[in-house]
Every structure is written in C-alpha cells, then in structure tokens.
Length: 165
Image (cartoon, rainbow, N blue to C red; front, side):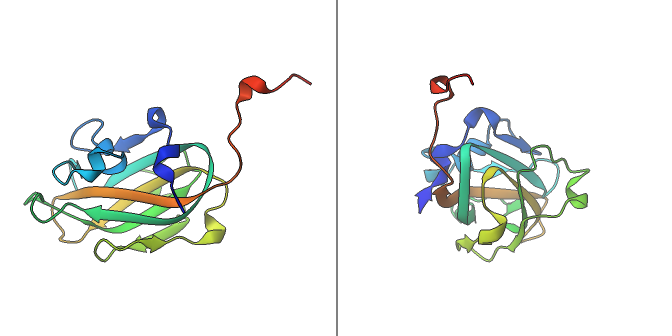
C-alpha cells in the first residue's frame, strides 16, 4: 500500500478548531509529522475537523491517527478517541457534521492502524476526519501523526493533453 499523503493537494487542506493556522501540517505532512515535538492541537474544545483533498481519486485502505508522544504531550490535551471519517463531503462544519452519516466511525485504542471498509472508500477525492472526543476527556485533543495508506483509483492525467471533442 502507498502512503497517500504524497497525493494530497496541500492547497485544499482545511482544519477547523485548530489552535494555530496551518498546524495540520504537523500531523499530516512528511517531515513535520516525523518530529515528535510538532503536533496538531484543538483550540476551544476536544473537537477537530480535518478536510483532506487528494489530487486524484484514491482508495484508502487504512488510517493511523496517533496522539502526541508521551515526552511531548501537553497536559491539557489527549489523543483522539472517536473519529468519524466522511467520504467526498467537501464542506462539513460543526453544525452539520452530526446530521451526516459517516463512511466509518473508528474508536481508537492507542496508535494502532485501523483498516477501512473497502466498500465505503472507493473513488475517494475528499476525506474528512471529525474528532468527536478524546481519550482523557481533556479540554483539547492533540494529534501527533496521521497516516493514510491505500492505492490510486486510476492513473493521474494531465488535463493539458486532452483534446477538444
């Protein structure tokens, strides 16, 4: 399986309720996500919404969402516990996330990789992660690393090569 992070369109990533702008890179992007001291932390409460758009359709097969390492964890934050994953839902907010049906709900227990339902994750262009709660019931959620493993749905195409009909 491929690390699908290299197929993420960075300009389209959006994170709601993050403590700092662009901190999603700390958990998602190669380089920063490999540094234990860099994390993604929620701001007002334990909830986070992370919208990830890919440059082409993909077939995610597994995700790993890890909390911060023990040596770098904040006292007021803990690892995510319940995460709802939505497929091809480009505009979710905290107001409408409860009304939508998730493709899969995962209850995290440690840093284990979670297999995704193959039938629910075909031809995915956008994955949205909604962290509903965290392990410790703390005021904030802290994520140290997010891995998305899978395969490409089809070949990447350069649209400039297409000819008009």
